[in-house]
Length: 371
Image 1: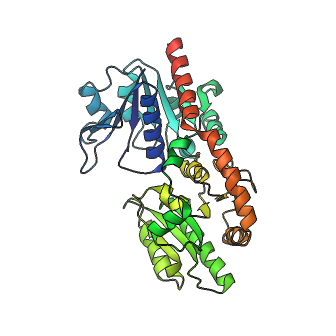
Image 2 (image 1 turned 90 degrees about the vertical axis):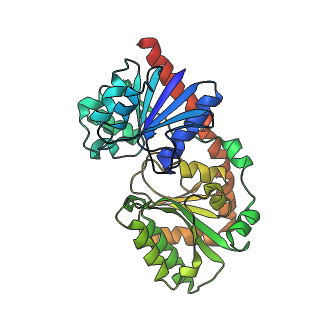
Image 3 (image 1 turned 180 degrees about the vertical axis):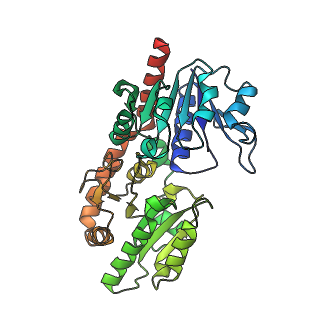
């Protein structure tokens, strides 16, 4: 099958949507399909590039939209199926029109709860797609609420090549040595794009609260903080760094480059923390599970897809006291952490990329058969 992926941003941008799109494309290539990726040009990137068997085409978004520019160069001509990843004010009707002119099935993946309702996209534009690929049932319900037929909504979660991921992991002691963290430390981590809805300040405040309750500046308790706002989110990263730097516990926080392999950070961690206000089905939780890392997460749709409370981790409200209590609970209870580690590892295989790609291909093949 000749598949065209269309996404506003792609590698080397490293957000969750970009990583999940790249992994899916690589899996399709491994299964013998042809995958081309159409995206916007970025500074210091090649216009055409072969990456792990997929062809990437980057076009500008100036006088014409990047999809119109690509159409003029014949990039879409051989596509049998087109899949658009992510929606927003920029990727709406003006970007979509060239995709529908091909006369082939067109799908759209909705990655985050709230995108359907909050991005100002007209309902009639969604109705043109052959299918809406939703990462959890809350997203599907949003699509149905604006008039998308239920039979056009498909719940398909992100995936990860679990065995391949695990084969590249360092053991905990080696990972800590590489990051300069004591092998005896209790290590929490928080990874992601520094945007307001991810609630990194809440995580940091809760971590500091734990240290205050312990009445210690114990160097053996660490928070690994990996991410960036990539200059796009009104100074969120600056605020986070000032918050840490102005604390007496600043030496307990270790910054990790956003370009570092997240597997290294997770391998070094005892607990991973994510407190987003709204999510789809975050890649990073699958990565944490596959790394044997229990997760403390906000109790929202998207997180409860993965985590059963007190099994693979803990689900809490987005409240500083609750999160601090959860961190302290896992700090004190090594046996519980060990149990959750085993549960997380077992759970990870339910989200293998082979299963995810099979679900996508089933949707694509059904659409082709009915077109």
